[in-house]
Image 1 (cartoon, rainbow, N blue to C red):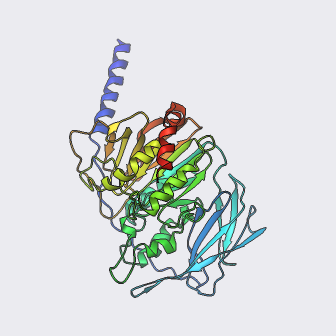
Image 2 (cartoon, rainbow, N blue to C red):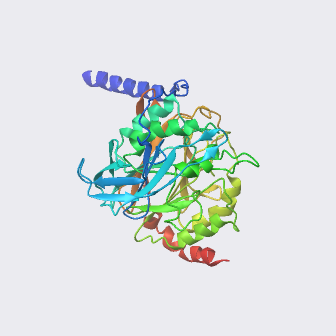
Image 3 (cartoon, one colour):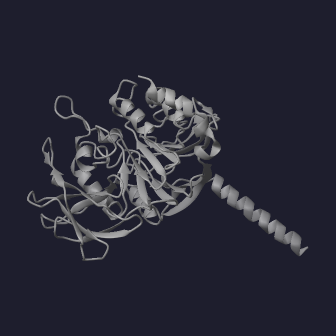
Amino acid sequence: MELMKLITVTVSLFISVTVITADYVRPQPRKTLHFQLNPKPSFYPRQVHISLAGDESMRVTWVTDDDSSPSVVEYGTLPGRYSSVAQGESISYNYLFYSSGKIHHTVIGPLEHDTVYFYRCGGQGPEFQLKTPPAQFPVTFAVVGDLGQTGWTKSTLDHIDQCKYDVHLLPGDLSYADYMQHRWDTFGELVQPLASAKPWMVTEGNHEQENIPLLKDGFESYNARWKMPFEESGSSSNLYYSFEVAGVHIIMLGSYTDYDEQSDQFSWLKADLSKVDRTKTPWLLVLFHVPWYNSNKAHKGEGDGMMAAMESLLYAASVDMVLAGHVHAYERSKRVNNGRPDPCGAVHITIGDGGNREGLAHGYINPQPEWSVFREASFGHGELKIVNSTHAFWSWHRNDDDEPVRSDQVWITSLVNSGCVSEKKNELRDILMAP
């Protein structure tokens, strides 16, 4: 009798939990953040963020109001004791009636892997600290796109701060400045606590374009403020580049620059893929803004052109995962290629749910496509822990009010381990050798 009562209670609890999950009610949108004026001396470094700049190096970026401030970074492994110094470069820009501060970019290194460094920008001001990524597995990435500057953005950043990650990946739509240049400044201040401590690797979205016909070319603000290692990876544009972390080769592509087979981006991509050594970097990831596999009604079909031009190349290269944003919701696919599930295709993830002011994209196409595994319109972030050369763990954490809730998770086996890489070796060679 007591056993039957225990079973009844257990079953009731299971049913209750299931119902609560199924009937999840999304919290309401949150307003755009407003930032109070916080006067600082003109030499004071603001909007500090770091990014990887080739093997064993880091680029430190910051802004000052003083044009005479030097682009110097002092750094070392002990607080307040700087054993090295590096000199960098600076840039500024004008945008209609707005004039930026002096934007400094300084590369420091060589740095030891998996090590905490203390650094100071401009020869004075506060001390910051950063941690370099590990040289080998495991390595963890925090992933989120379409951040913006709302209450939900702050919640997402707080949740990411609780995650033990090594590198932040952002597939486009950073500040949502949308021509209002001071919003680039407030975004830099908002993300500084995280972006000054762990490298942020970003690519552009539509909200970074800010072009004005006959007056302003696109991406001027983005390129000035968020310089990525394009030169270090043989690219001629800050809009597409690659880098390596531990045993992972990561390619950041541009959805808003030419991508057809005659484009500079396509030629660079072929050259970059020809250099990838899957014995050294068994995992191959690609990020860009506009998703190719999207069962949401929002932005449906916008990635078709880029997909038609590049999917066969990425398939032949055995890309493990493709991460995108743009659609303000979350979706994960099976391994897929050419619109159908394929064990040698990439896992596609849409994660444009960082907290933007435009709100969530609630409408999905039904029935759910065969390739789509999980989809939900909620704000949140992803975590990708690559455990070793064969296995990685992906999880998506929904912003449930102010608590991160793991709502989707999956173990992923690398295509190197599955044999797909060796099977498609000749196919890749033929594509790369084609004129």
